[in-house]
Image 1: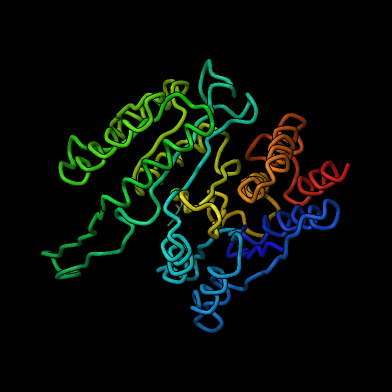
Image 2 (image 1 turned 135 degrees about the horizontal axis):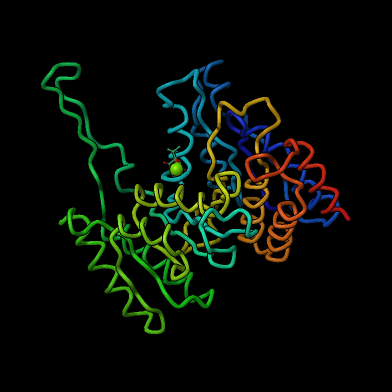
Amino acid sequence: MRLIAILPGDGIGPEVMAHARRVLEHYVSVRKLPLELWELDLGAERYLKDGTTFPKEIAKRIENEASAVLLGALGDPRVPGLEYARDILFGLRFGLDLYANVRPVKALADRLVPLKDRSAKDIDFVVFRENTEGIYVNIGGQFKRGTPDEIAINEDVNSRKGVERLIRAGFEYAKAHGKKTVHMADKSNAMKHAHELWYRCFFEVAKEYPGIDAKHVYVDALCLYLVQDPRPFEVVVTNNLFGDIVTDLGAGLQGGLGMAASANVHYADPKRVAMFEPVHGSAPPLVGKDLANPLASFLTVGMMLGHLGWREEEQRLESLCAKAIETGHCTPDVGGKLGTKAVADWFLAELAG
Ligand code: IPM
Ligand code: MG
């Protein structure tokens, strides 16, 4: 049995996760996949009720017993500071040492591509975003807050170990998937210390992969190239913050946040528990309106099943998402007229058929 922890979370999270769960239940009852689903009541609602964020016992059980975590979305306007959300999200990413945030940028249909003269086949790359350090470590502070002299500092932490293992994950992925090029995006022309480390480490690791072309690109230029012509990109490795930004740009290239999936993994040891989440957030304006696009969460379930060894199922879910777009069984954000539930019902019927 593989234990799957499901955290529907906040906003549209529970709306899309309810259907992602139906997909998993289909695989359990019809395909007999040995999955045990364990739904967790964590998020804004729970926090507002009793102050719970991410209890240690739950973190331990996930670490020791679960094979994967499926997260909906976190964020609620009633809790502006979002400390509970950071506890949960970073409790998972940092706490489980899931150092590679793997975010595929793949357009599933031509009409989703916003670029002139480009089609779906031109948009197919994967971003490996460092996921356990960088500017996300929350080291820093505020001084003289609220005065004209106030100072705010967030430290950017880059360890050799952290940088190297992420870069290596990118090359390993490229090698395993027959990719010819790995790009590393940094800002070493301005961030002389931290990104000199990235630059040096990248070319050192690249020597171990002679068949793969290692290319450096400044992150600002990367944004320009991705919009002008994304075709040369196959694998992009970068730090936590740049990866966050570049993958939203990437989501734009593949049809919006409703189409973007991600995996958070300890790449060197795939047996360790991993976490899967659609890239979209809790989207407060869409909540309760049956407008949320469930396809990102289906693609995310696909990544999870693929990671657990069920590659055919991953392939099937991706093909069905492409079919949903092609046949117009989709939500308005991707040009359809259906609501969340109708898309999911169609999807489940196809899956069963
Ligand atoms: C993401 C999100 C998060 C991040 C936020 C919610 C903290 O933007 O997963 O891309 O910055 O990592
Ligand atoms: Mg983001």
